[in-house]
Image (cartoon, rainbow, N blue to C red):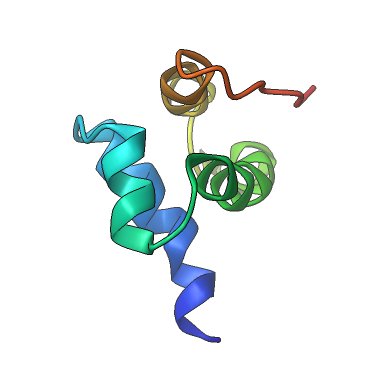
Length: 79
């Protein structure tokens, strides 16, 4: 589904805005683990993506969202 490709962006924005990961997962109709997996796959690429000297997302943004999932026991296995 094309809608799925936008989910990581929505997850990222919602978590940064303060939404609990459980609420975000519920809005997606999936588990917190699946929400993390979708976000993390996208975020790892965006964190290292640089165009015109600008990163897709900053390391600080990545860490902030990852910590919210880690607080729920979701393990962040990224490098």
